[in-house]
Amino acid sequence: MDATQIYLLNGWTVKFQKNIHMYSHDLLLSRGRETFQVYCEDTPYGFVGIWPYEFKETVTNATFQEILTVLRKWASLSNFKYRLYTSQNDYETNGA
Image (cartoon, rainbow, N blue to C red):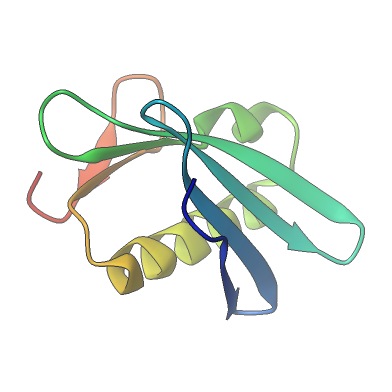
């Protein structure tokens, strides 16, 4: 297992550990008492899929937008191709 990477971005702590189970990664975002585990894995198509869209139903829109902002920044700093799913069918990408 790879070492955990920890980032402090926009007041959020992002903890990322690659390959905790095969191609799945551990991606946690926390701020104060709020903690969110974001589904994240390598895909057969060569990009990292990040699926935070389920939080839309459980947090305010402002918090959801903050989560997306932090995930964008984290993914860019991590230097891999990604797809950030903002809904079940919609995603943002850096070229993946």
